[in-house]
Image 1 (cartoon, rainbow, N blue to C red):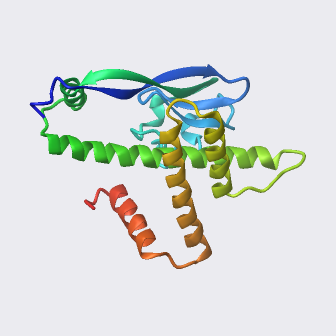
Image 2: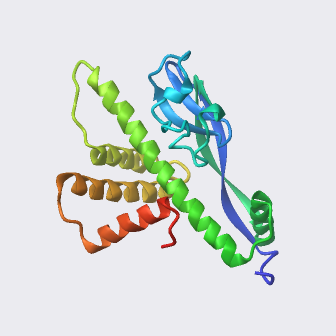
Length: 216
């Protein structure tokens, strides 16, 4: 890494975009700069601890930091992210990473941390898709001509939208969505009592081990 410290590479940087909602409220985390629920059905004056994304201890189950309900606001604002490409040297990336963690780390330690963060973001994205699907179902229930969609079909729609719109970074979203679809298919099998394939059983075991902090 020392030999390549001045080598420049292009990196995708996420920038937060705040969009006003025409109706309803979003539950936003002030610490993570993250929309944890896009359509909260609770009245604005209700205790945010009652929000569907909060667990029994009052912590969020969706935002990357799993922050306290006190770190959240219900706002008429949706937080989304735009991808901007910037040039960074390897040394800058390493320095920024260690600064964020507040300590010196070896290359292996950084890779281990990145892997943990990757899986945290992956789980958060799955939760967001589930929350979005739950909102869709709720809106569908009150519609004049309701239709019936499964979670997998909903993800298929999201994949189709990404393929058509082809916004910057859509390739990465396609990879994420296809992984989420595969996980939904496994969960659907479990719900129906269908035997899982060996690789599917391993996937679910590794996921549960990560959730419990067990090395895989």
